[in-house]
Length: 183
Image 1: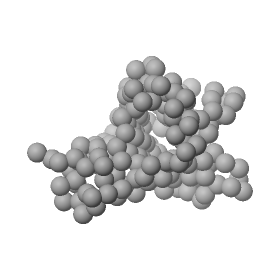
Image 2 (image 1 turned 90 degrees about the vertical axis):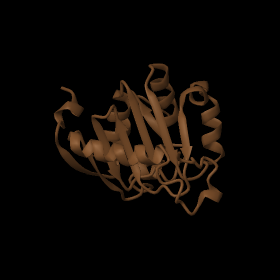
Image 3 (image 1 turned 180 degrees about the vertical axis):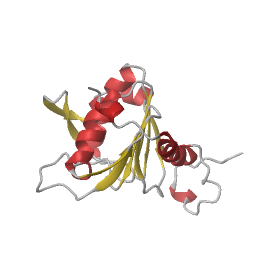
Image 4 (image 1 turned 180 degrees about the horizontal axis):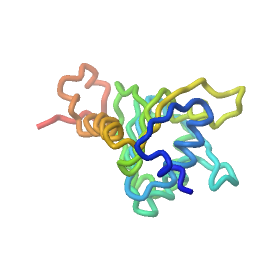
């Protein structure tokens, strides 16, 4: 039974640990074409791999890149040194992960293959995604869906930012090394 296909054309409200289980553990590793990730905060997140051992989330992303899955990441600020150390362990990331730094991003989104989307409050951190213990995680909430019209709207918001739609009129260009002058 494929849990993602079971949710076809549905919208589900999820919280806390469910975000980790349904988005990080189920949806993202199942990608076959692309994954788009948007977050304001990005930290050295560790996750279960095949429900067995804890690994850096970056290892999951590196595995996807090895399979030919395209991965895009938008985040608001540079992550800390622990993230950078793990990033450097996976050469696939510097070769294949497309990253955009936007100091104004605050939405948190995951889009998988254009058929699944998450939109909610959780940053890509252990506390945000519910990967930490019950006593150390944030209280988060969001929606997951496979309903095409909603997936398309979530993907469109990501894509507009990725393509630089708001760059020309942004009043924080001086803080943005990835400023994109739209033609």
